[in-house]
Length: 115
Length: 116
Image 1 (cartoon, rainbow over the protein chains, first blue to last red):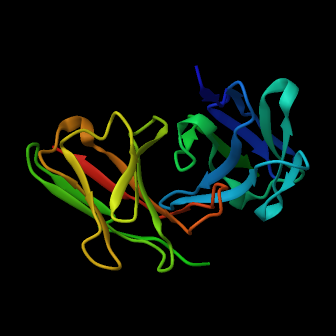
Image 2: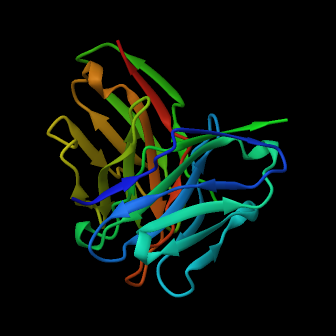
């Protein structure tokens, strides 16, 4: 079955430390891959996306993600976290055989940043 | 950056009542969507809309739901007879015409619907 998994519900990181949020998908082909961030009271903001080509993609706010086909993963990283990064992060996928407009979201990872 | 606007930000209604959630997509966008997020659960696709008709809908989007673009700017989601389980954050999104690749979705900040 096609699915998106974010195994970490909560992550706490110290300010200035590095961050990696995990995302795995289950699908026979390569889907389109996205990371969204949701700050309290805000909508979903696109951080970055992967369609094809270079497997390391750069996004806004200093985030990057790496697509690893062998692991069916698309993990989000940031080398140095800022307190303003505290938010909920969603991995999302478009599975090609379900319509190009339909995003399937993971359950989200809530990032807490400690001083 | 352009924004998708949703009103109201919070809506409280009695079970069985009709509600209309309103969205103003980005002006030059042609594809419109509704997603929802029940508290503590995933964001789920409800429906997509293009060229004045539904292009795709999920199992959640049953006969109680309808969408409409009544004029050139608004995009609405109507729930005819709300149920307790309709309580959720509803997100509107829009995207520009693409060329065969998934175009960036712009999401609104959501309407929190509470059904009592």
